[in-house]
Image 1 (spheres, helix red, strand yellow):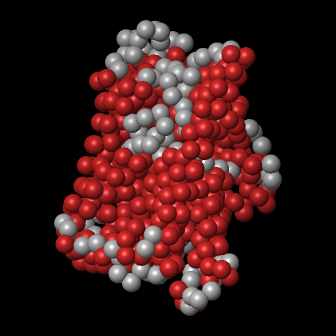
Image 2 (tube, helix red, strand yellow):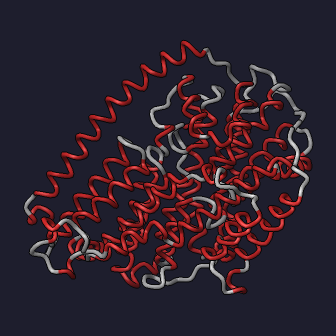
Image 3 (cartoon, one colour):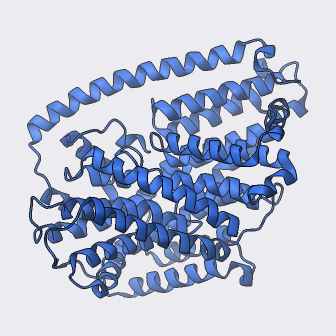
Length: 523
């Protein structure tokens, strides 16, 4: 969960201010959220400053505790870890791992800042370009390659992220997103229950190819005129508001680019020097889209059960027009070509990471995307993911993960038990911190665990089941306003109480994990 949303609770105007700040590049759409609530600027400013002060004190204390814990771990006797043959460099990596875990858990600093710090620490104390104080007396083979660590900033998966972000910016800039939403929702008519299903399905569809945060912000603005036609004391407004984060969070499961955890899992599954399973874009969608659709329909049923409509019909009035110029044509054609290349990667032989360069190159060459537009790219997510990759590199290249696996009797445990424990840990963490950070922490470790267990994982469907299960679990963890940005955006309207979000989140989380497991067994 990005730190801009951290610390938000209740219906505070300060929480909405944080959402505005975080979603600044959607200012023309988020403006409509004023229809939900009016702010009193002076009182809000004082309240915001007071809350900010308290929050900063907590951040400072959490930072101090994290740093102290890191120092203690770094200087503990090697025997304390119970890992045979633990080297100096490996112990330093454990200390950095503790630092990253505590900082991500407490959100003492923004999640992306933690990633940058851990990469910096790895470079200065564990690499072959480390300070001489840290590298003296050590064999070069014991140290990590600084080039490999720095290369995580330009990992092919980072380019895939960037391609998705650029597509989203171009779609919004051209007005294509609004027109698509208008025409896609039209077939759902005016019946309240069916309109709710339409919002869930369309939000899920957009979230498969566009950031779930961007999708939630866009779709929520379409609800403003709809709410005018609903009674203020009914539960229909709650159902429609919760439909947005539910659709945005679940929809991302459907494609490899739908959400960062998917791409992190695929990185380890498809790594030529690792598992090299060569799971394609189309192959992923063949199994995950049906599961996503089932979960979306289940979510619709839950919302109708918990928050029934008083009014039987709803009038839809989505404003906004597409820009009629040649650049819009470029966006439409490029969007279609990119999606087709992603779906047909096994036929063309071009992987999804390479395909992501198509929109970047075309939009840059044609001026659809300008240098100013690039400021809207969610660079913080790219930095955070790079940190997770660097941590994975350190665990693997140093031999620490392999040593740890040999010291912990994972081979004697039931694969199903390991899977259940991993999913529960992921679910718990993802409800409180970023699902990307959670996946970045767990997947590198589990990748090595899976590799060490060999054929024993066949009982649960192999390595694929273990790693993709983590990605799915991270996406269905949506119990709290702080769990995901779409949840926070919906909660900021003041229409959804935390216990209402919790009720739906727990149900969809449990169903999602069970359904995800059986889907993976089919794969």
